[in-house]
Each structure stands twice: as structure tokens, then as C-alpha cells.
Length: 228
Image 1 (tube, rainbow, N blue to C red):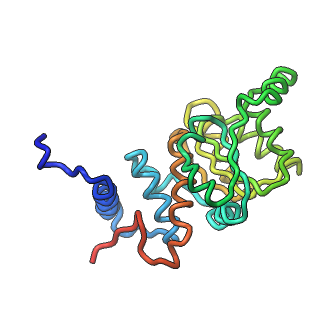
Image 2: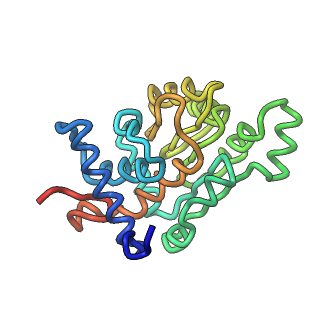
């Protein structure tokens, strides 16, 4: 392609992408309606990250989860991810500015030792270690269904308190089942039903909330495009 024939300015590329996403949504389902502007921004960010319009239907929001996530972000809570990949994709400068802590415990010596002693996955052990943190917590799970199952189990047994869970593990073994269980639980959650998901999606979802926390106050915001 000739340089003059394609967009080279980063924000223009992004704006064009979200415009195309809105146009595609109107083709797929002209009657589709988002519940609110923040949900719209989050779903569109998921589509932008994956180029997968299935998330219009597969991405579920339960128990006022977006407000719960905002509450943790605005009150200096803590984020735990199941993978370093998910953590690496989250905007740390935004978290630092908000005073939000963030951790992936998968390589923590306490987690490694517990996993060996109990014969469980490190992801499950990481949840147990994180449960000792008394701060408001968000768990972000993009790869490990066992972590998601452990979270649900510990919450049900009153051994863990979590403000919200982003549960989008990808795969074929227990991925769909764990997300369905999260969706049906009493935990405020964003769940990507089915096999699709991943660490990149998990990071994109929390970033989308951070980028758009004031969207209702500001009106149409980044990621939101409507026809005039």
C-alpha cells in the first residue's frame, strides 16, 4: 500500500476502528441496544481487541458489576490476575494514578509451595493467598478455569470476599463450565460465556472500565460512536 492510502495517525486509526465496529453492529443487529454507555464502551473494547463480534452476545454482566469495579478502582483497592500476560496488558500508569495495587502471584514462593503441598494448580493456590488480603479486590481471570472455580468455591464457603470478578478464561477444559458457573453465581462478574476469551481480553475489559469511568458525566466518549 502507498503511504498516502492508509491512516498513520494513531488516534485516527482507533477512532476509525470504533466507527467500523458501530457500523458492523448495526448490520448484525439493527435493534441491538446496550444497557448503558459504560457497558457499550466495554463491549466495544472487547470487540476492538479481538475483532470478534460474538462478544455482543457472549459477554455477560451480572449484579451491577461495572459499578462494583468502579468502586474498587476509585477507592484504592487491589487487582489480582491469574497470569503475568493479563497483568502486562493492564494500564499500570492509570492504576498507579488511582492508587490501585496490582499483583500476579503465580510465581510467588508461597503459591509455589502451597500448590506442591496441596497438589493443586498454582492458579488455585494464588487465589487462596490473595484471600488473605483484606482490601477490596477484583480478580481478573483470562487463562485459568481452575482459578475461577476456586474463587466461586471459596466465596460460597465464606472464605473469600471479592468485589467483582472478570472471568474470561479461554480453552476447552472447564473454561466454558467455569464461566457458566460464575455467570450463575452471586458474584458481580463480567463473564465471556463459551470457549472464547483470553488474557488479552481480560486486560482489555479492565482497561475499558478505567478509560470510561466518567462516561455518563462526559456524554459520548472514546469508544462510543453514533450516527448523526
